[in-house]
Length: 257
Image (cartoon, rainbow, N blue to C red; front, side):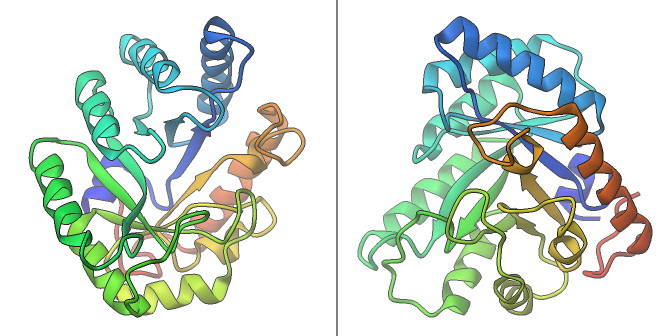
């Protein structure tokens, strides 16, 4: 059993985004807690607190509130473009994992060794798992490495690699998922990080081990929409059908029981 499986205790866990939308800090917190109730009551397996619309201060306020609750699911954090802040907040507020949009390939060759050392130091001091992006949406590719080299580096720097398409809400190419899976091999955890819907989740989850989901849980299907209990329920119903079809041991050889 991998650390990813052990953390979520279920095959193909769904990590639902809290995008921290709101008119002011109080509204952000109230919305986040209302969204948490909807997401958890409809069966998601974890939450990701991200400053997509909000601020770093909003992230900390929401994390502090979640830490004071007896949530039945773990939660993680992504302070965009600030890995050290993500790890610091994760350690302070008991987050189970950190998401970083890029852990390899996004820096020129002369800057990568320093980044790798800093990241290794952050991980050594933290109990949080790291979900790390490669060729992630909106991230530059500056390493001049072929994909397999950057994926090999990533597999040494994180507990699971995250793959996405080019934009928020855009379906991740099945070909790209297949490329990542081939290079990483059948046992290294691979997370699809964008564009998973109730309609495509079977294809998207077939060769991945988890999904980070945001837009498709909204009433408009866009990140700017409102979390919809109906959309979450329909999405999780579709995921449960996938789990039944690929019951452990899974397609990728992982077992979560």
